[in-house]
Amino acid sequence: MITLDDVKRGYERGAVIFKNARNFYGMDEVICCIGHKGWNFNWFYFGGMDAEMKTPAEFIREVGIDNALAMVTNALNDCIKEIDEDEYAFYEAVLGEYR
Image 1 (cartoon, rainbow, N blue to C red):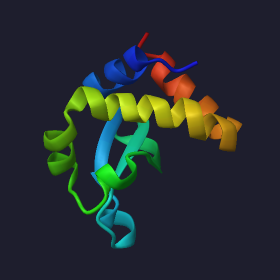
Image 2 (cartoon, one colour):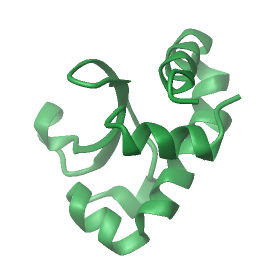
Image 3 (tube, rainbow, N blue to C red):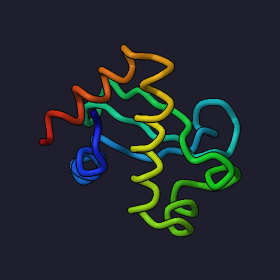
Image 4 (tube, rainbow, N blue to C red):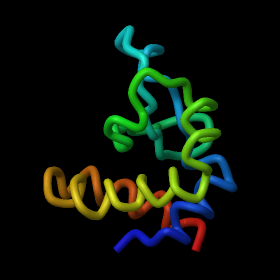
């Protein structure tokens, strides 16, 4: 199971980053990317209405980094794990490297 501490350590080491989905699909919505620094990132939506129409900087300024990381942890464990076990296993493996 992925814990909040796993996500925090991944963020501190550059394995968890926030990007604007506009970069990929022309929409303003914050996404979370998890992967090995510099390559092989998977991404997902996680912030619901709080993350819409905002840049990552605006979103983090509004909710705070601790709340943003908690939202990521919840999305991973409550949604991603149920929808795609392989994707969840990828995130778990990447973040497990920082334990």
